[in-house]
Length: 201
Image (cartoon, rainbow, N blue to C red; front, side, top):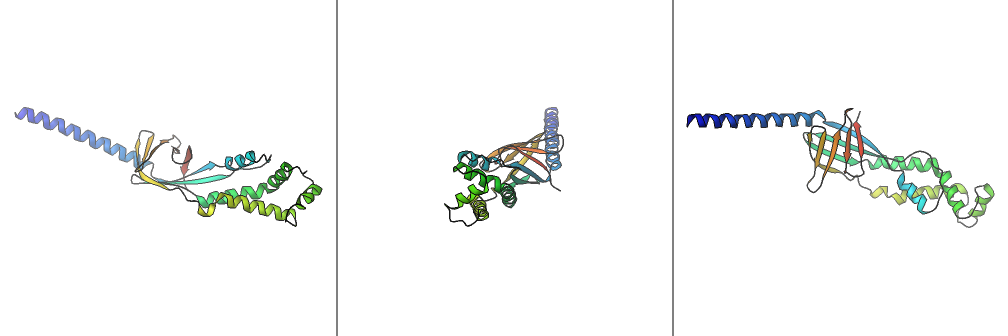
């Protein structure tokens, strides 16, 4: 009986030690990637789709970036879109390309891209100058995006690490990630996907 109990205690001890070691490894892996991260998602396709639908042949330059932030601490995560950063990038893109956008617009209406054609086009509008028209179009695009009412789409929950795999768990939705050899994190299924996060300065 003592031998049997001794064997049982030894076996149970091994199980406890193994569980403790595994738990320790998981905690260490989780702690290892703790910190603040940032990612940039190319959202230029939003406007490109509008141009396509309206048959505007816009020769635009640059990209529209939507920044994202990720915080990992004590097994908890927060991931959110930076609305202010998105607004800034979108506005800068419109500013940079407003000439190309408005030129493409009036060409789609059957006018040319020379000054005489622009003045003829203005004759059918309430604008006094082409600059007024450009400013109106710029503000209209920005207003259409609805930045004033746009939310950061914040997601919070728990995360765990197993090897190079990360599991993000919310109350009603799970998504995944990967720890890359260079220390960056790839997150898939959070909002837009994939998001490539780097450590924030």
